[in-house]
Image (tube, rainbow, N blue to C red; front, side, top):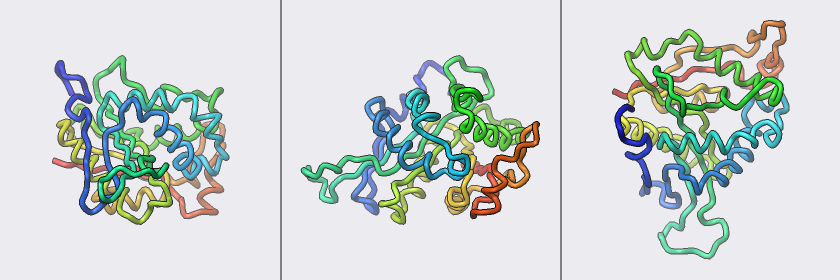
Length: 253
């Protein structure tokens, strides 16, 4: 988004309360949320992500060092959402877990123009320091390679839903679908029109299909290989429901 306005100004201090989900409060991630959101993703997202599972990725070793830095960048974009518990009555409670993080939707903006402030997972992960995480980034990179989304949709920027995670204790309540819909609302507010997600699990792909996304490209795990012939995810494809990575796309204008 061009101009003098700071990227996240339009959504600064944005909050949402839903009558269908009275136990939860939604708000854009702020600086004070970084530590708790990082811990939440390290506990619930990375250990369950199928590519990481297949590689026996250690999130504390290969993710924790850079995750807070990436979150701080996402804050500036103003599109990432955290969900916290609240009392159904709205009254203050003495329960220790009121206010805890129960879901996160981490969104970034990708642009055609170069931006010195722009960072993403590829900015932090190296083959030597995070060898397993690096292998995962190669899948993500290959998935969008040659997609040419900017020219295809005649846009200069798009929103990328990078991580969508719900605490399993609160699954089945519609939080994932609500986060996708709220991401669409924020995307419109920021005057963007395309949302993508690189779905590496069967379950996340189903969530985006349910939300009206379509699959623009697939990358089968049983055939994905590096130049040296290594096929790191072949066993994953043969032993689980996760067979392919999908580039999910939704044009909202």
